[in-house]
Length: 311
Image (cartoon, rainbow, N blue to C red; front, side, top):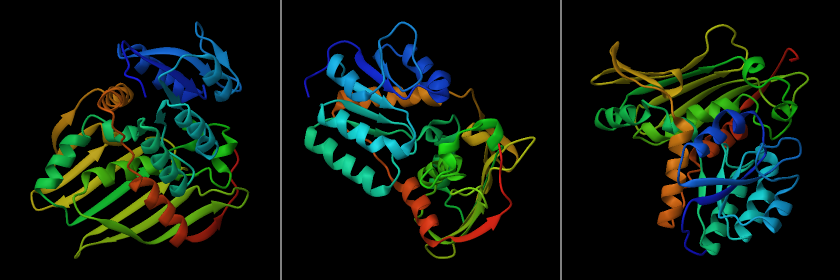
């Protein structure tokens, strides 16, 4: 891969809500990037060339990098095409449909000498690093994750997410796992799980997971897509130095009820800052731990059929 002089010329694949809400503003606000083109079956971005396939975009445009924002079950072939064309690749979360796909992309990126970035955006929430520092200094005895939201509000009429391989409630749940695997200083593993599948869907709408760890450490996770009203994105840890509550998806931190951090959210700007940094350093950042835990939950979980779900 040739050295990059000037802004990183980037193309986006899959122009949907997350791209318009997060990726485009983050790229526009970062002088290290220049949006050159997009590839999407339906969406376009005013002012830049648009293509219907990544292959057409790669064949026509001078790019240094691509950001892949399509659903995970169709991402592998696009990522492979970009890596084989010597482009740096930014993977929206989750990085792939399976652990083995992402492992192969890591191998290919190393072979091609380009950057691969698995972008766990929730790790860049304002209070996550402070929570990590506290827990590494005060290892918890137990942790409870409560991640409940209204799927109709956040993922309206997205049929792909309910298909086999679409992750279901683990689409937001993996955000919680990306934080947990980053801030908890002890290893933990899925012990048992119950996954609730609507009778008319092939992906779960809720999950309850018990994790085990070294010694007496316990971790539980309660994921649910049926919550209306206030949404819950909380991680509660019991430690020798008090109870830690990381709330609002990692935006707020309190220790024994005392607010420690409450800052504005800037997850995606931070992601693109990280991507630019590792591209310039010739490095990759591909942590599959959150995806592995989700895969383990599907492997070990007991399936329970619940009432049908309709948007």
